[in-house]
Length: 359
Ligand SMILES: [Mn+2]
Image 1 (tube, protein in one colour):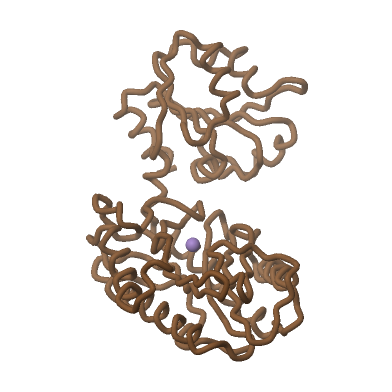
Image 2 (cartoon, rainbow, N blue to C red):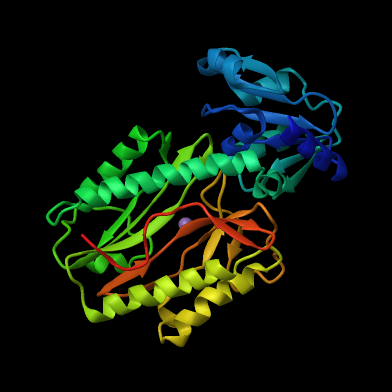
């Protein structure tokens, strides 16, 4: 209940009568609902009200905590129920999640509740989710352990001749067997030249001997994500690819070694980027050094050069994932999930990375 209470305080501070929560991961975070349709109204005062449909009638009884539940009737949708029940009749202002609302729903609200001032909001629930409790960190640690275990199993069974999709299928299969609820995102298996694609999701390409393979995957466990990348070598690869592995590895390790609360997001990015630039590959590292991680794979903050005003706080979880990508040749990325602590950080993902692993 602490999460809802905190949100209600923010709603009140903002001078809103209520916040309409339309983003399902936020609804799960706030009231423990895991279904695929629903809207949650969180008033500044009084009990939050959750709407869903018949398919989830039994499920919400088991799951939902802290909200009044309404199941909309057959042939009705949730929007209609909001009108029929005159839910916003005494409201002056209603906040909505501007990055997580369909135009159709927005237009409906605007048309049907003309007397209510609709206030676009960002970072209301997001701000709450960024700082993790110790219990939440334990859950994220478990998600990371599952990912480590899957990495160990899958790298043991990878062989030349397997397709990237076959490797991705093994990752997905073992993720479920190890206790993961689902994949955190579309699994990246990028081999050979394709390892130079930072987001090379698995294809039917066969993995050949003497190629690099980048594996980037994670799982969802109790609503929280893990996200890890390792680059391995199928047989021997060129001296240059071995060299960039070492540069990325040292860049990533130095960043983790120096990471602590109070640094800003730009300083973290600079730590990783300067080392890569010093070795001549600055232009081949074209993405952020990392991102917040939690109920979403990408949360605040983005660790990049625009992050000067964003200070890291204890109990935030971020990824550290520098990479070097040589178009047409291959690429390397190494990514771990870390908890920011007062004087340092705690690394959640523990798969080996100290040297380029040859399979
Ligand atoms: Mn990531």
